[in-house]
Image (cartoon, rainbow, N blue to C red; front, top):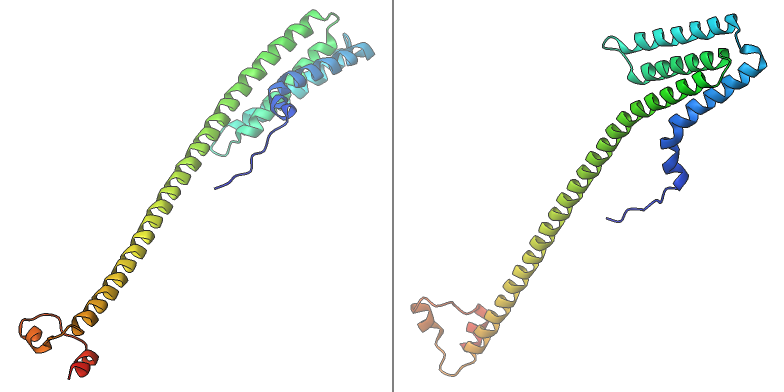
Length: 202
């Protein structure tokens, strides 16, 4: 079974690993730009970002409880809550130390959560590859068995045809021998000659 081999670009391999750092870095850069444009020590902006962060966290809690909870929605809501909190602090603070500390903490948490999903995804991929490999081996074994069975049946048919041809030739040769008596063979319970050969003898 021939399968097409697709070589993934190196950017496609690196992008998922760099996504958490890119996300937190983008939030930090935008928040510091916001800080430079009037958000520093702005109580109204800080209250707005705190309210949005709490609302996103509450949405994450609601999405994660109960049997109908969706982990994807909950994870997205909690990530949004953390991003809004980081943006609020980075926009309100006057120095880079606290925003950088929160950025490092948020990046570490993001990678910790992403690593869990990466491990799960890797396990699922390995299990799927193992299942596909097992199915492929099973089908290949069935094909080999059927090929051997078909070859055996063909050989048996050939052997039977060759035996029948040799038997017919032997009967014809025996009938042509001088002094051949088919009635004596019949009395001895030996194979009879076809009626054609009997008519030739008589």
